Image (cartoon, rainbow, N blue to C red):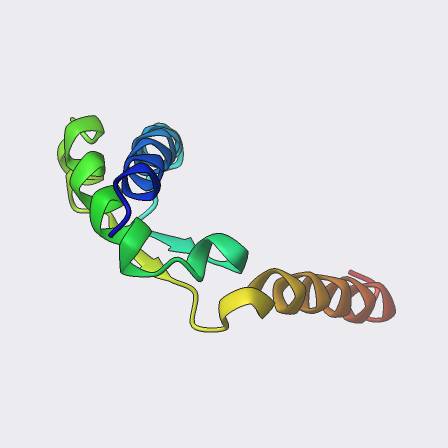
Length: 96
């Protein structure tokens, strides 16, 4: 409820929304997953982020974009990196 902290999250949410909208416009994603330490902020960040995204999402397919927290929380990046490494090793063994 601190006004300075709230304003900081609002600014961060607007910047993140601009980046997400730009990325979604380029690669036509349906969902943006917020993980790691940023994802731990929860609704304190996600609520203003979703609100700000409506300002930046001007194309119809970007307006349908969903923003959700990672199900694995702060471990999402590590799990993704491990999965990518494992997939790379498996592909190398299979001659792919």
